[in-house]
Image (cartoon, rainbow, N blue to C red; front, side):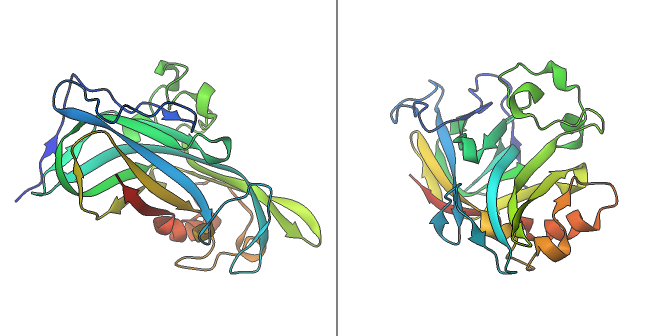
Length: 254
């Protein structure tokens, strides 16, 4: 059966912003009064199965010694696949995450109760939104450049993912910086998991930072490149992007 997108034009409390851990979680028995509920998505930073210590250096599979300083994402296109295959897509829903700063969660409203078999989201934006006027967003909106500092005024469009830090080079600290941008570098992450939405719930995902370097390929900062800001022709980013599909891992829903 052909998948159908359920788009609700009004009456939704959308997940327009991410929240820090000290922000209040939604009441577990609360709903929007229309049979829909709120779902939180939380992202935990991990390296090789352990919580990231932002003051610690880590060893990659290519023997690079690295420390993370910035890990930031712009997420969009949140879709919930129902048990019968129909797709419920939250309209105009976006999130800005900055994991080192504790901005690791987004609350999505207007989710219909029922049984589901997958959930997905996109790191990045569709082309129309990506190249729209950024000044139209409120200052506290996830797509406000004043909030996320992830918009390239000179090139047009947003940075979808920032990964910055330091690595050991000849005994000294040197910087690495990867800014994933451009329409071609959006990535949709799909998680085939069965879950039931009966009240407000919470997803937990891992953001596996080791997978940026040890996944489809072993990426070496020292030999493959320590810097890319997603140029139109960019062999460094093309290689870096090969590992992007394994970054996120579903942990739980409850």
